[in-house]
Length: 219
Image 1 (cartoon, rainbow, N blue to C red):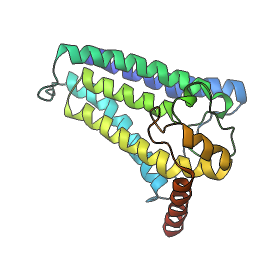
Image 2 (cartoon, rainbow, N blue to C red; image 1 turned 90 degrees about the vertical axis):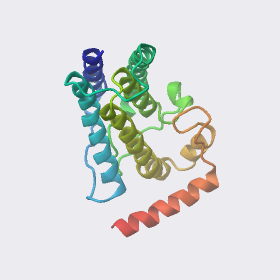
Image 3 (cartoon, rainbow, N blue to C red; image 1 turned 180 degrees about the vertical axis):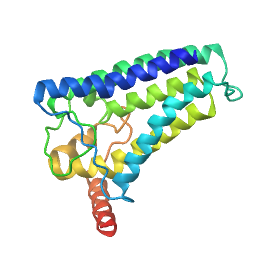
């Protein structure tokens, strides 16, 4: 199971980052990669750092299992391994489908000066961040396939990174770029899951004010 988990992890990376970047470049002439993490110590920088750490831990989980790291008590059951396998495969497929649904607006990272179209159809009509939801599901599936401390840490760090990236970086950016269109969209569609994390317009305004204040303090 550890070898299969490692192969699926590498396949997921290849599709989500390698193949998707190549197709974006072929169709638009732009890779879609926005990898600048911003000034050290900012929320944007921390989100990027945690994301990279999660990717490394995601690779280390299956490797640690192959090296003999024992699974966590209570999680080493064949049924959970099978559930993890199904969740991993479904997560990889869902992440790729959501990436493709973004079309030319697909990006990895955020360029604060850039304006892309707001995608609200397809999987984005169910959740505002279906790519991140699928990535979290994939990492959780891998943690069930090789249920050791490293694999579980990968999932926890990824969830933290995605929460920070979405709440502190992407939502303020999308609000500033798309204004009322994004506010209305966020009010009716959940953040990561259908119906959960919808933002009331007045809460969005307060959140934006707090973010701008925080950004001023960081600067």
